[in-house]
Image (tube, rainbow over all chains, first blue to last red; front, side):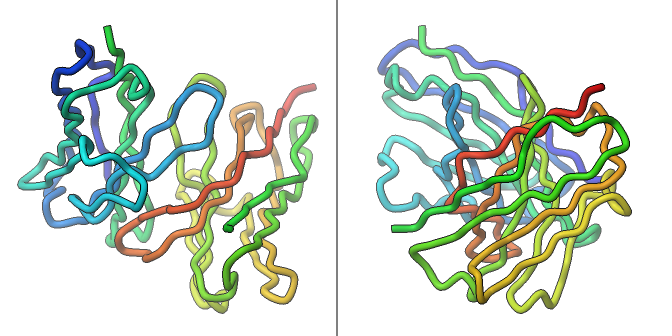
Length: 108
Length: 120
């Protein structure tokens, strides 16, 4: 089955840049979405189609996807960005969605 | 405004069954593929199942095939998940979510979730 791997945690200082990788075989051939989930809340879509931001998502969130790795970048990280982040892709070979393992972002 | 409200969760014994519902409002329900996603306590997100417009295609997580059935009633703007032969590892918050496009996986709206607890 298809797998997406993320680091369990990423730490960042306020105002700095956080980069969260998501790795999977030939992931660059698929579209990747990113979801933010704060404690006790439902997930929130922050990036879709690799690089697009939904309405209302701050410009400091950006995405890229190439080769075997997609990356979510948070520029000028704020305390409110502290949350769990998950990547997601559709695996057409198995007709299933696959979530990444998740990354906890801590703003120190 | 788009709203998705799940219901039907609760405590069920191992081997039991449960039917989850998701009531949708604020958009043309029949025009969207709908999904179930779950999250076990303290764990990550896990996709469960999808149903396309008109129920043309049903997709299931391999690990759950044979025990779950997804369905929809467009006249009632509702999504359902029938779960049978429940196990302790099925304990999770179950979310329904709308997806804009199947191949891009952009789940743009989520419900608040309903908790299913499988325990004797």
